[in-house]
Image (cartoon, rainbow, N blue to C red; front, side):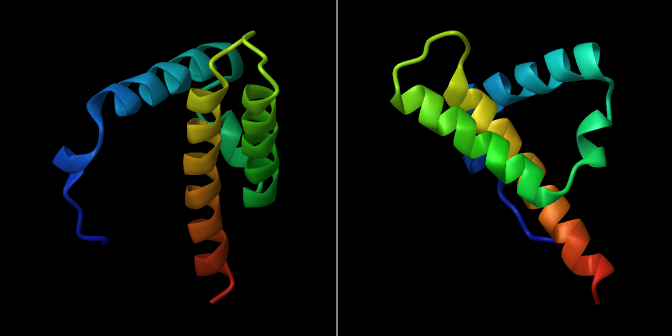
Length: 84
């Protein structure tokens, strides 16, 4: 287990990411994101970052990118464990 200090995380960012996860679970299913590998989530995070940089305001791309990066981190850790 990784030693953490979760109280140091920025609360508005964490709450915003949590809201995106809740909406995603409602529209796609709770664990649908687990069906994709880390590269898929990294690609989607980059897509959101580029859309943000391009000025697109259709959705909160930074929060969505944060969600995708967390998914990518989780899947990457799972993939590393599976390859031991």
